Amino acid sequence: MALAACVAAVLGGCAGGRHIAAQREFLPTEAPASLDDSAWGEVLLRHVRDGRVDYAALSKAREPLERFVAMASHVGPRSTPHLFTSHQARLCYYVNVYNALVVRAVLDQWPVDTVYALSRPSLEHGYRFTVDRQSVTLADLHEQALNEAGGDPRVGFTFCAAAVGSCELAGMPYRPVTLEHQLRQAAARAVASESMVRVDHPRQELLVGQAVFAHQREFTQWYQQQYRSEEPALLNVLLAMANEPDRRRLNDATGYRVKMLPFDRALNSQAQTLVDAGK
Image 1: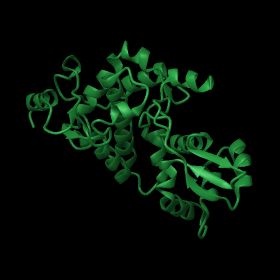
Image 2: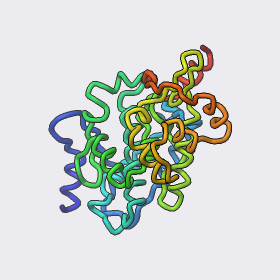
Image 3: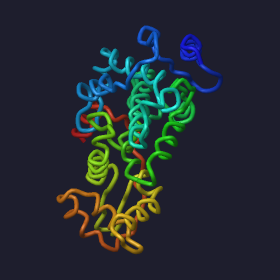
């Protein structure tokens, strides 16, 4: 497809859903020669602390985010495959672009204090973006990332859907050379989060978030492959992914029933952190 046609597709939108286009002034005049995630890294460095996003400040300094979104509209595994020759490179691309576009969708509706405001249309299926010179939804990017994950369920911890009940947004882009370390970090953060793993001793319940509860089979299969273990309990998986302080917290939950935590739809904003602290 000629570059002019690609630009027209980006700016023109598409039928169905809500289309968020890359900003005209940040669209490249020619196909970039390399993948550059530094603009996304700048957003994360300046506006993300402990998994929470300073949307108010970001809404007034959007250029790095808009530059990354515009770059992703023209570069990707489909249109520039020579830049994505490994599963790790493709996986990192889809995860980083997914997370950046979720932030972009929040800014499109800002100010909001809950992801309910982003559910009309559905955040995962109703918003459309131009990525890799195609019109896609967040659900499409999520699926493409999982296709590159090789059955590793820890990848599920890399997606941040802007809600407190979803996984935390990492403070730097995912990159192929550090991906395994970053996956370990993402898993440990998830196990440490009260929004993802909680123990109710009086009721003898192990409460886990949707990212874990809906994929228990995948997690236990991954554990079996990693540790040559037969029929592990979900608790064994969580202990393997946890840091030492959280292992001590979870050790007393042996034999507890596994239940799903209610999903917290509050926005993952730094302002919301202050509200939580004041409860």
